[in-house]
Amino acid sequence: DVKVTQSSRYLVKRTGEKVFLECVQDMDHENMFWYRQDPGLGLRLIYFSYDVKMKEKGDIPEGYSVSREKKERFSLILESASTNQTSMYLCASNKQGPGTQYFGPGTRLLVL
Amino acid sequence: AQSVAQPEDQVNVAEGNPLTVKCTYSVSGNPYLFWYVQYPNRGLQFLLKYITGDNLVKGSYGFEAEFNKSQTSFHLKKPSALVSDSALYFCAVAGTASKLTFGTGTRLQVTL
Image (cartoon, rainbow over all chains, first blue to last red; front, side):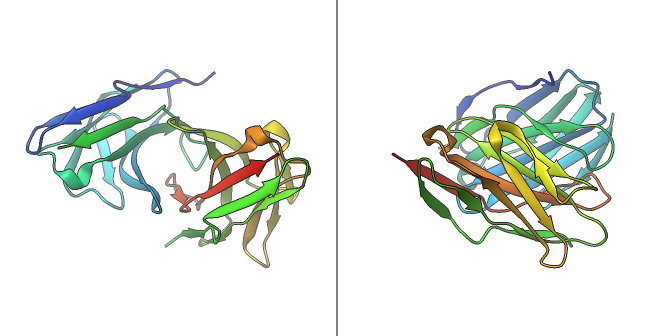
């Protein structure tokens, strides 16, 4: 079974803090994705990576950056957290091409 | 640009009755279509997908979906709903690239 894990289920941070969200997949997938989920808006793509050290902006990259130093690990970084970044963050991975994406359990982030 | 519309925020159905959750899409070229389900405080779970072939796709937990190219629709169906089917359902589309575009989600409520 594909397994995608995320470093935290719940996080509480202060405005202005630097926040790291980590995602690890164990299926040797080339592609990894970060989404945020907000009520009424569905899932929106923040960034994705199609190879180590490669990244591409999604639909809402502002205020975020990413890092992929190893194939199995994809990190989302909030350089200076703001209250409007309070959300559910979901990581996913898949093989090359438009195949099925497999999701982690999500991290619920609250920025105070 | 690709897009997905889920016109119903919520669908209510009695246990034992058939259910339909609607999805229409827009994409250049041949579509890759997916349905995912999300239970409270969990990540998304893959239900089924259409890539090519038979227009009726069968998936997990007794769900199926019908691809209709002329109506650009991919409605999710189940002949007999269960209370345990109550969850948030997302439709998603991809073109030839790896990125998925999700709908805003439809909450399914199944009552006794």
